[in-house]
Amino acid sequence: MIPGMPGKMNQRQMNQMMRRLGINIKNIDNVEKVIIQTDSKEYVFDDAEVTIMDAQGQKTFQISGKPVIRDRTEDTLKDDIKLVVDQTGKSEGEARKALEETNGDIAEAILKLSES
Image 1 (cartoon, helix red, strand yellow):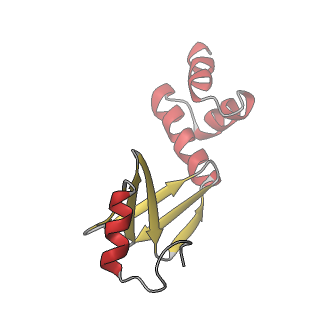
Image 2 (image 1 turned 45 degrees about the vertical axis):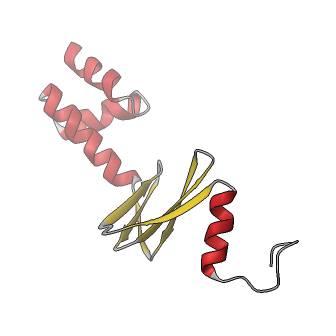
């Protein structure tokens, strides 16, 4: 219960009060997929329910559903190796070694292999 408010409030009254306070809430319809990526993990929500709360220009998203959590470290490395191979024409082993030597800096690895 909210202090200073009557004991029971229906949804309509709650929505009116929130609008007066400058808070708007709406659902996003027909969401197919939501993906949240960090440096090491990927959270994939299929058929998620997403709600946006706009409070005085600040938007907050609420995602409801069951995510599939994947480790991104190896996938990211594979993508980086493929990119370096495509750009330089070198082998995957050479690309991996260059990425390790440059601490994962793709541009530096490409330059390093292009010079040799």
